[in-house]
Image (cartoon, rainbow, N blue to C red; front, top):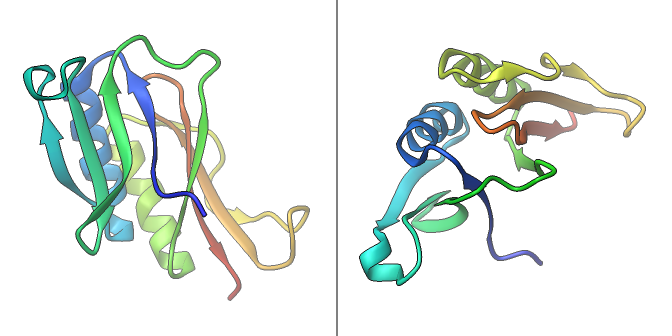
Amino acid sequence: MIDHTGVLVSDFEKSKRFYQQALAPIGYAMLSEFPAAVTGHTDVAGFGSDGASDFWISRGTPNNPPVHIAFRAADRAMVDAFYHAAIGAGGRDNGAPGLRPHYHPGYYGAFVLDPDGHNIEAVCHGE
């Protein structure tokens, strides 16, 4: 089981704002933030729900190639809301909300590119 993951971002403040807005519809919030003075390396921010940060962004040279991170949503309405919030936050369309039956029946996802080109997805499995 994966405990946490993250991406490197070129503009920490811009990415923080993007993820705060994009992930809010699926119940995520920024729960932690530590400056380089604390980490000894770089600024970081953690996002999650239920008090646990499981997705982190770190100031640095973005991952190349960009990475794909998928967040599980409780229902299709949350996937739709994620997509619209992410686009409103400056994300770029990489696949509008919809069924992807080639993955499996009931796979409903939406894809956006974050400010650094990382492929961020919200997905619901089932009705």
